[in-house]
Length: 218
Image (cartoon, rainbow, N blue to C red):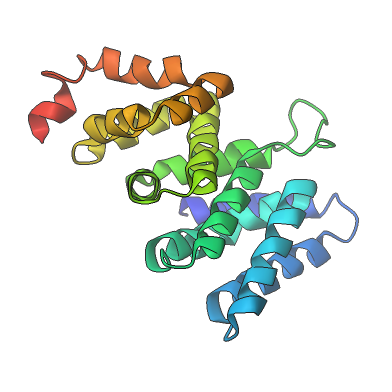
């Protein structure tokens, strides 16, 4: 059984303990379908805004998103770079999917969808590469800010997965350094989020920007 199938099984178990969880599940699915297959640009943007809102507020919606949402939003980031509103919406929704809901404090052994979503996102090196590419090619402040929030969540909740992904990506460390050194205000954001030192610890562990594993491979 693959990861997605196991995750869907967890979703079903957790939903069974919540009030009308199938409503959350089907609502997230409908929103994702509108984003993927909608004809009108405005309807797709509205669906994205609704998805971001429900994922930010609902434990069950975070679980449902993790089971089916990542391919849709990563597809938007890859294929729709000219639509800045959709790119912003996708990134903000990803931030919401990786951030625990305010009312998600339950038993310690309770499934934490934000942590599971972080692991799912970091498992695919292509996802990390796409995030770095969007950051480097886009001047929009919010695109960069949301991307940094996503990286911060990955560093906090799944640092080993993130490091593995960066090492797999061609020129991964070099691209990461270029991203961080790009602009002073972006560095300030990372420092504020508490991730600057964590990011550079990855570089330090691999021998720095000169002679490191990734640099040699590139």
